[in-house]
Length: 265
Image (spheres, rainbow, N blue to C red):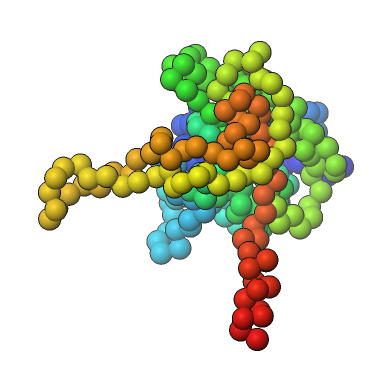
C-alpha cells in the first residue's frame, strides 16, 4: 500500500481547537504506515466564505512549524496551496476539513468554508471529508466541546475509507459529517441522510441603527425560519444522531434541464 499523505484545513483558522481533533483522527488513520500529515489553515477565521478563492490577489503563506502553515486566504485557497505548492511533488491522498466549531447542515453547506474546502479537494480528484461539531451553550462552555467528534470521528472515517482508502482515483464527491452537541452517551446512532432545505431562508440582514443614509448591516440567523424538513440531516442531528451525507460537486438540476431542452428545441 502506498504511503498515505493527509492534508488538513479548518475554516476557523490556524489556531482553531478543532484542528487538533482532526490531526489526531488523521494520525490514527495512518496507524503504523509511514506517511505524513500537513496542516494548512487560514491565518484568521473564514467561516461563511463557502467555496470562494482569492484569485484577484496573492495569498501569503507562512510556515509555522514542521508541516504546519498559515495562509492569508480562504479554506479552498488552503487546499490549492497544499496541492500546488506545499505538497506539489506528492499530492495528498486524503483531505480532512475541520473539525468545525458549529454544524454544517441543510442550507448551511452552501455558505460553509468547511464544506467549501472539501469540495475543492473533490474537484481535484482527492477523497475529502468535512467534519463539523454542533454546539450549544453547554458544550461551548465545557472543557472539550468536541467530545462527540473525538469519540466517534475516527471510527466513522475508517468505515468511509475502508475500501482502498488511499487510492488516487478521480472522486468528484465528498462526505459531510456532523456530530451532535449532546454528551457521548446520548448519541443515538448514525443516520445516512440527505442535506435538505429548510422551510425558509435562515439568514437576514438587519441595520445597526435607524439611519437610511449610512449604516452598518449585520447578517443574523433567523431562528424562526430554521425549521427543517423531516428526514434531512438537520432533523436527525437535532435528535442526537451523527449525520453522514455524501455530496457531489455537480450542481446540475438534471430534471429541469430535460424540460428546458423541450422548451428551447
